[in-house]
Every structure is written in C-alpha cells, then in structure tokens.
Image (spheres, rainbow, N blue to C red):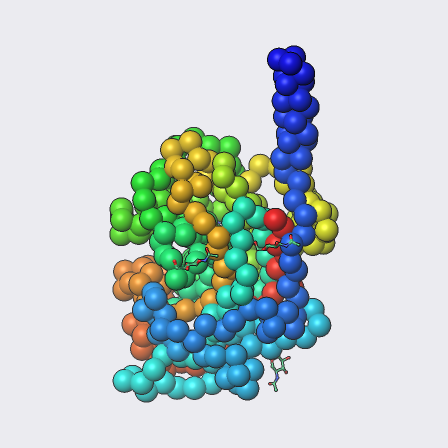
Length: 318
Ligand SMILES: *[C@@H]1O[C@H](CO)[C@@H](O)[C@H](O)[C@H]1NC(C)=O
Ligand SMILES: *[C@@H]1O[C@H](CO)[C@@H](O)[C@H](O)[C@H]1NC(C)=O
Ligand SMILES: *[C@@H]1O[C@H](CO)[C@@H](O)[C@H](O)[C@H]1NC(C)=O
Ligand SMILES: *[C@@H]1O[C@H](CO)[C@@H](O)[C@H](O)[C@H]1NC(C)=O
C-alpha cells in the first residue's frame, strides 16, 4: 500500500514537472476580435490624465480605433486644439471581456505611443476590485523615457527578494500599494529597445507574462532578436515557457502570497496623457519636455501623431 502510493506520487511529480511550463491556447485576439471581444472603457481616467476616453462608436467614427485583418491601431486625437477648461484629449482604453487567473499572455506589438506627455500601458487588473485583484504592468512608461518598467501593485503585504534570476534591474521591491506612494515593485528592462521611440524604431517586439501561484515572469524579445522562441513569436497552440530562458523580470512568491494578492484579471491597453505619473512636473521636465504637461497637450495636437499602438495580436494561454 505504502509503496504503491509512493510510486503514484513519484509518477505524478514527474508528469507535473515535465509539464510545468506547458500551456494551451485559450484565446487569440487579432484585428476585428478587439471590437467583438474587448470593450472600449469610456470612463474617467483613474490616473487623472488629460484624456477623455471614448466609447467604441466614437473611436471608430473618429478613427482613433482602426482594425484590419491583422492590425489593431489605437491612438489619441492628433488634430484638435483643446479648450483649457474643457475635457481632455480623446483617447482609447480597451479591456478584454474575459478574465484569467493563472495564464500566459503574449503581446505582439509593432508600435507603441510615443511623445512628451504620453503614458501608455499594456497591463492587467480587475478594475472593479483594485487593488484586491492585483495589477501587473507589462509595458509601461512616461514621456519617452527608456527603458520599459515592469511592475506589480497589490493590496496587502508583499515584497520581493533583492536577488532574483532575471536580466532586468529591480528598483523598488515593495509591491504593496500602501507603501512608497504606490510605486509598486518594479524591474527595469535591460535595453532601451524595450520602450518608446527605440522600441518603435526596432519594429516593436514581443512581451510575454506568465502568472501562476508561484511566480510572475515577464520576457521581452525585440522584433529582430533571433532568440525569440518560435512558439512565442507565432502564437502557437501550445507553448512551453521552460524553454524561454531567463526572464527580464521574475517575481517569486517567497515573501509574497501571490495566490492571495491576485485573482482573475482583464487585459487592458490604454494611452493616457499627463496625470499622476507622466504629468508630475519634475518627472515631465526631467524628460526634457516643454511647457507644462497639460498646456502642451491642450495646444499641440500634432505632437501626438506618433501616439498610437499598433498591435499584431494578443494570445492567452491557460
Ligand atoms: C484610419 O487609420 C488607419 C490606420 O492608421 C489608416 O490606414 C486609415 O487611412 C485611416 N482612415 C481614415 C479614413 O483616415
Ligand atoms: C479560457 O479561459 C476562460 C477564462 O479563464 C475559461 O473560463 C475557459 O474555460 C477557458 N477555455 C478554454 C478552452 O480553455
Ligand atoms: C472583479 O471584481 C468584482 C468586484 O469585486 C467581482 O464581482 C468580480 O467577480 C471580479 N471578477 C473576477 C473575474 O474575479
Ligand atoms: C537609454 O536611454 C536613457 C534615457 O532614456 C539614456 O540615458 C541611456 O544612455 C540609454 N542607454 C543606451 C545604452 O543608449
């Protein structure tokens, strides 16, 4: 009895370790899928940006959102001079209708918004239960400052060890939103082609995030990086993250009960302007940006011509 139970346990351990990094496709989103399976959130920007998030009908009518068979474009208005006492610049915030708990998401992005005042993000949370459901920011930055920043923000005590197996550079290791003005625990990518103008000049690339009870990992491959795994690059039906090499960011559960501070999340793309990070005057001016952030947004529509996302696809594995 005892020995047969032991052999069953050994067999199941072998199976689970062989399959640890294996995931099956759950959903893929390309072109039109972003209109049928995602929602334009026409909400007040929770980060107080100088934007006016519009609904899908308005976004399509004004060509702020555009889809073709293999492309999603999302941008802010780049033609209107704003009245200082009127609403902010029209922009888009797009949220998946589905939510996932343990999963891998791959973002295949050709271009991200750039320019002074911009604060784009590709990220996850459940925005009716923030911070209780946790938040993972996969692509995020402000005012074209490179490199990219990867962050977790959670609703209770959660810290990251100083030394982890990752290629990025950890900054804050405290993930609790109630510490350090909600800076989150962050890791900076090692290369400047991870964000903004340099990312765009390289033709973008692939970001992938894996979340389990044990860890959150993020990888990045620039467009011409020959080390991109073929399963990640092609949106394969099955992927194996164990073959993806060292991640840029590794957030283990050693000092953080990831299972308690995360639950199912939506995937969100947005583009806000100014607000509680990009618009902090010291942050804005340190980036070499002119004027005040809000005046710049109000008066210079043509400065936002390159403030657009061009997304080839989003692939979710569960
Ligand atoms: C809408 O935007 C797309 C993508 O940038 C562009 O190809 C198309 O010409 C635009 N359509 C109009 C009517 O401006
Ligand atoms: C995909 O994920 C959703 C949300 O987590 C889940 O309800 C559904 O069963 C999954 N479908 C497949 C085919 O795995
Ligand atoms: C998101 O949060 C709301 C509010 O707490 C909750 O009702 C909903 O079930 C959550 N969604 C998921 C998928 O957990
Ligand atoms: C990366 O960009 C930052 C500012 O955005 C700059 O200070 C730094 O020199 C750049 N690094 C390289 C290797 O070009």
